[in-house]
Every structure is written in C-alpha cells, then in structure tokens.
Image (cartoon, rainbow, N blue to C red; front, top):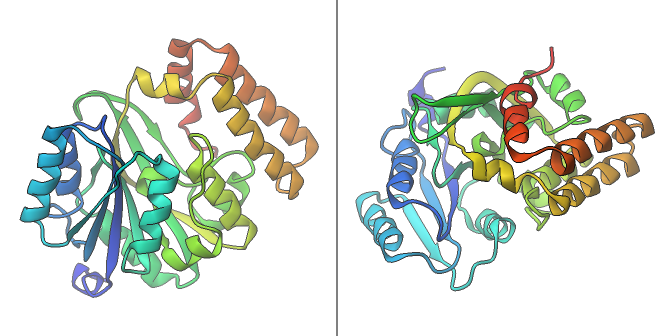
Length: 283
C-alpha cells in the first residue's frame, strides 16, 4: 500500500503547548509533523494552554501563517494537559487523530506507517510505536521506550504497564470519546485513558519501528517521583485490581515496584532505572 493511498485518509494532529515550551523546539516539532512528513495531516490543532511568553506566542502565530492546516485555540488560563487534550479531542475535525508533544520530533514516515495500520485493521482503536529519549540533540540518546508488538501481546502487557507510547499514538476519535475522553489524573491522563479504553474493548497495537524522538532530562524524572505521583499510580493499580485486570499478587507486586521507584529511589537512580531497565520490552 503506497503513500498516495494514505494521502486520501484525512486525519488530525493534536498538540498542547504551554508557557515552559521552547519556541525553537516547538518549530522543530511542528515541522516534523507537517512539511517533513511523507503523508501530511489535514489539520494540526494547537491548544495554547494559558498565557505564554511573547517569543513563543510569536512563533505560534508565525507557524499559523506559514502552514495552512494549522488551527490555534488560545486558552486564557492554564487548564493542564488533561483538560487541554480533552478540549482538543472534542474539537478536532477528523476521526483519526495523532498525538504530538510540543518539543518532540516525529520521523518523516510516522503518519504513513500508522495510517497503513488503521487501513489494514478496521477494528484498531489505538496504535503507536517505539520512542527514543534524547537530551538537547539527537546525538545524545539516553534510552528507548520499546512497546509490545501484536494486539494480543498488548492486551497482556496492559496488566503490567502502558502498552502504547503516548507521544507516538494515533487513535480513533470516536473510541476515545466513547471511553470518556481524556480526564484529569495527575501526570497519568494517558494511562487512565488507556485503562478505560481497555475496559470497553478497544483494540491496541504497535508498529515495530521508532516513530518519535522525545526530549528528556533530569527534570522529567524528578516529576515522575514523590508521594503525589505515587498516589496517582496507586489509584490506577487499584482500578486494575477492581476490574479484574490484575490479580491481588500482581497488584501487591506492582505497588511495591512503584513505591520503590517513585518514593524511595533518588532522582539520579530513578533516571537510570527508567532509561536502562523500564524502557525494555518484555520478551
């Protein structure tokens, strides 16, 4: 199936940007999902989450002028990522929607590959691929977030952790809305959505290919620690237990791991743990 046929499938890209995002990184991200793609989106929906610095606002306006498919929603107050994506999913035009973060880089054939997956499997709800973490430049690779391949494998993998990479997903708008859309859940809006989609029978799969290069750093790993984040993770584990996704022994094991990593482990050790251990796909 060639890229010409993929060009006939309309789809949107959903991006949220806020005050701490870097204008130059944002341009790189936008260009990676528009002019550099082998199959270009029909809509790029940018949600500006509250007031942003003048340099970033000017960059957003400049890109809006340069790329006709860009639509910008300017929110007066910062609502947080969950609310931003919730609004975006309700207002994008097309059934297929690709997520993109404001400082990441998508590979040129990302959308071509994902559209092919949806074209070949009409029952597919969510699809992603591998993500590479880097700091500052693509020469400074810090780790890989590898995902399971095959829908059956993904369903089993969901019992342990997320089966898809949120920065690299493409999904059906109707299925996301049927599951209740994005909702607030501290630093885990995506995980909460995947859980609810799993519970209503949505089908997950991944392509065995790197789709996105994700900017990373020590601050990211600091955010992924502490009591507040542990409580967020614990709430998801309780839901998995409640709905029979995991057994009580698996629940106890998961909680022990999360408590150790999120609460007891120092930031530097947590950084190593995420980059070298948790980002490897189980055989």
